[in-house]
Length: 366
Ligand SMILES: Nc1nc2c(c(=O)[nH]1)N[C@H]1C(S)=C(S)[C@@H](COP(=O)(O)O)O[C@H]1N2
Ligand SMILES: [Mo]
Image (cartoon, rainbow, N blue to C red):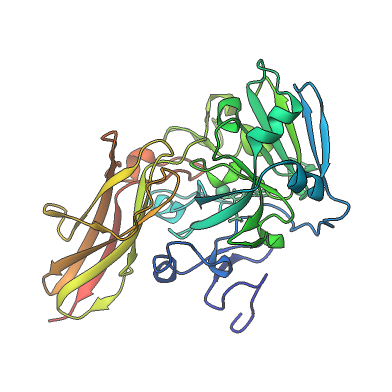
């Protein structure tokens, strides 16, 4: 694999799977940039990367609207004002590997803590498009469908999912055609994707083909089966899919990006670096770090952005004794929410939403 770069990704990019293509930046790269460079932005795909011709491409808006729309990319750009929003995408499977240490989670990617990245998205407000189509106030959900081909349960279909109608009308929810000032890369959804700030990455549907306004959530596999949360006692054998919670907003999370587990560090103060992300409604306003699980110190935020859907990078300096040390990090938000201490209580058989305190074990030299 050395020397091979996939989809114009950085040589340091860690490829989790080649087909479908999944990968992320090393954590020490990730925490160095507030806005992640596109070549380090994580990729999460469930099917192929479709090659879409932007000249013949069109977006369909249908369902509970007065005037269904079929828009080319040029029409979309000409009819609606362009806006830019900075938003962090996090896959609900971020940090699954720690849940897999509690009990096996077969057939799911063993994501570390790198399935998250931050970008500036350019596009039009979904709200503007839905107002132009005349959204019916009885519509409760907007269902999105992509042009890729995913096979599940013997059927092949485009990846899809939905968000509540209220979220479609908020100014941050976009139909994005640009990422970090450039047209979307094919791997990130060219020519158009949804960006749903504050929500799990799965609702930011790439290669967007259709938006359908309806009374119920999407019937797509990725809304009805995958990306649902179950209690720890539920297994693939006894699951009743309709009982799961459809994931929407992110959960409050923080991760130590540097040092990494297994690092051998010189004696003296250790600089600890990481990211924190809120639940989509409340701002993360405290990150605490500990070397012994008892004494905690406050981290310093390195970034000023206070949008609730944008991550915050932080730094702390920790004095550690020689020998093995476990560094822990935890965050709180302006509503007083905190994170669960351990992975056991939040383990779930699909491996989603791990937001337990993050821990790394390091060796400090004499
Ligand atoms: N059409 C389509 N959209 C998709 C996906 C996909 O497989 N197909 N994956 C989703 C998931 S689970 C995540 S976390 C984000 C990842 O976006 P990225 O690959 O641009 O980082 O895209 C979402 N949109
Ligand atoms: Mo995801």
